[in-house]
Length: 154
Image (cartoon, rainbow, N blue to C red; front, side, top):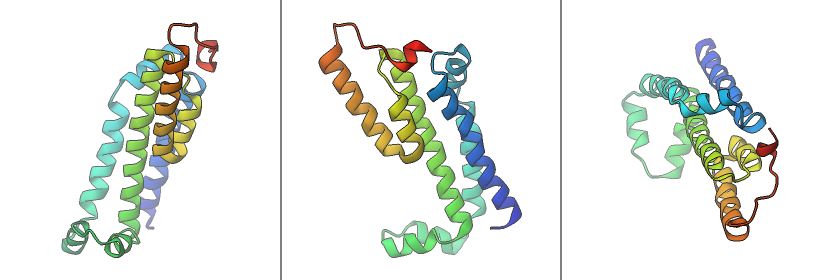
């Protein structure tokens, strides 16, 4: 990777960490709620994604993006700029899903720490975990007092 691409890649990785830390460690803090109610982090990350996407496009990559063949997609993502663009895509979408999990947990009182941690490292698994946790909570704890959660203790 070139220096600018390395910097952008590393900056994007570091950029998301405070948001995850707030949601996981300080979920009830008013600052966390205000920050996670904002779309500004997503505007910043999506803008970086747009820059990387547009600057990585040329006739060859544009054609490769239209392919439905795994071999073509694998070859496309072997290019550093395309791989960095794809990674930023993951960062944006995982954080967006994590935000949804956080906000839903705040709204419903559902425990979310485990789902958020999973979402940080493997987005779809965190989403699945939250769906399952929500179902369990609704099925077995609705109408009763919910068990003490780490969020409630914050």
